[in-house]
Image 1 (cartoon, helix red, strand yellow):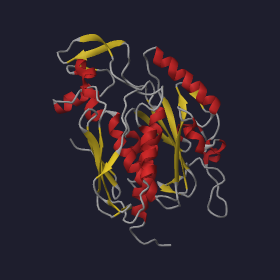
Image 2 (cartoon, one colour):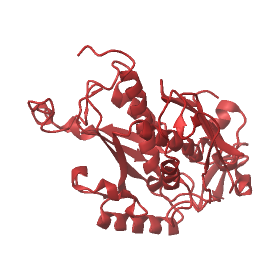
Image 3 (cartoon, one colour):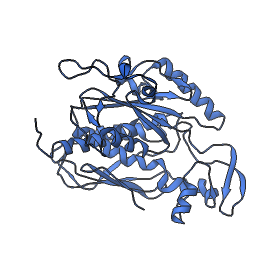
Image 4 (cartoon, one colour):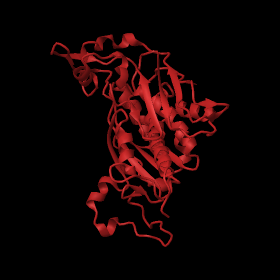
Length: 356
């Protein structure tokens, strides 16, 4: 199986399955002498882990990270950082009914067709449990980029949207509620919807918005490694993601150039920021912001049609522990992937002399 590594200079290679002994990874390219705040890593892991509230999966995993290499006396050494996260609350028998069945809109069928053999327990390698390794790498990337703020929040659940621009929101209050929406009134509506959807045995999708402050002008590598292209790749690699837009996004397609252009101030900043902080694939010093769309979770705790390995269509009810809506737990994953992209470009930008 290829495609288990992400990044160029700051690079994560992850391993493990949902119901295996452990998941983990190797982070290569992390600079030496970075003081590592282990509690900050634990905080990020708690934000992603299952069982954290009544509106997410009730699987219980402490997600304690064991570092095996690359950190000594509280600092990075420059060597590869190896780590594992042991699985402790697998209930593999909950997935026995999936050994010869393919759930709709899951990776079951495509994994079977590609590899001819798959770990059906909790989705195996295709499970979102793999994202815990990304959060570890992202938490360290944030510490490499201590001068940059990477903050994400839930901006919609179903047809309930925040109707304010991010500048009017308190992004430090994202974790003040279980939905991770920084607008209290909207968060209450979102939580009520998720609870109702869960009672129905159904699921619901939503969006996560990410805002990045403090990136200087000049990060990004045209032509094929544009900053927004790498952010898009990072976000689209996350389980259940169906769309990515930055700056004005699809709304920009309805505008005229005279409306969309970000006019300059004398210092090089811009009066508006419909570009989303990126122009020509390179950061321009303004806030970078983007939105990520997540589909509804494919596993329903009610009957739906499934395909069996023998080619039959049968009715089957989902079992196990699943999120009725992934977006609250996706917030730290979005931040982690964004931080890894930025750490990569930070190292690339410092690898050659500037002409200025």
